[in-house]
Each structure stands twice: as structure tokens, then as C-alpha cells.
Amino acid sequence: MKAIDNNQLAQRLVGFLIVFFAASKRPSGMFDDLKLNCRPMHVLCTLRYHPNRRMTMSQLAADLQMSKQQLSKLVSALESKGLVLREHDLENRRRVYVQITEQGGQEVEEVVQGVIGRIAEDMDVFNEEEKQRFASCIGELTGFIEKLEWKQW
Image 1 (cartoon, rainbow, N blue to C red):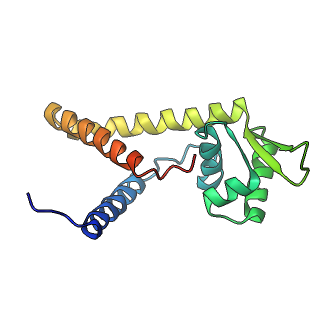
Image 2 (image 1 turned 120 degrees about the horizontal axis):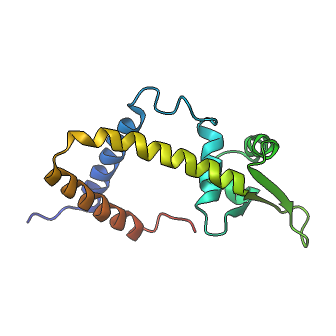
């Protein structure tokens, strides 16, 4: 088997990610019935899947690659809907934590289950052997990406 250098491997991964991203955007109307748009949902998902389900505003802004001002507006809107809570650190009042509420977690789970349902409907294009191969590839790819330690937590 011919060796693949790191640059070629990185190019293939980026190519895959581009195709994956385009495919995830393809189904028109897929998210039309969701109560939240992309940015607030991204905030909720980041908090929901963080090990502590809470982060400082600075950590969250860095993770989402947005300014603290943009994040503050989003958090205020989510807080008014009861989806997140803001807490000041007792030892350092300048440090503010954002935590997802039970209602916010339920909102994320509803969205995730809705997306799973919509995607499951599209899986009929595969025969049983292709489904098995696809499941195996997804598992393997997940393991490879986790090995890269891209997760910040």
C-alpha cells in the first residue's frame, strides 16, 4: 500500500468535511419547524454536550468563535426563554457562567431526535450491506477524529 503524507490526508479530510457540510445543508425545509435558528441552537448544543453543561462566557465565546458582545445578546435571548441561566462566580464577580437549563436540554434533545428522524427517512437509499458498511465507516471515522483530540474539553 502506498504511503499517504500528512498533507494529502489533511486534504482528504477537508474534502470529506466540505461534502459532509454541503450534504447536511441539502434537504430543503429540514429545520423549518424548529423553534430556534442556527446560532442559539449552537449555543445550546455546546452547553448541552459540555461535560459540566456550563461554561464561562469567555470559554463559550471562544468555543463558538464569536465576540462576547454577540454571545451576550444570544444568551440574553435564551435566558428570557428559560433555556439557559447566567451565574456570577462568587469569588470573582467578573467571571460569568452560562448553564443550560432542563428546558434547554429538552429543547436540544427534541431537535436532535427530529434531525435523526429526518435523516433516518433518507437511509432507504442504502441496501442492508451498504448500511452495514456505512455504520462501520461512521464508527471508524468517529474514532479517528476523537484520536485527533479536537475536543477542547
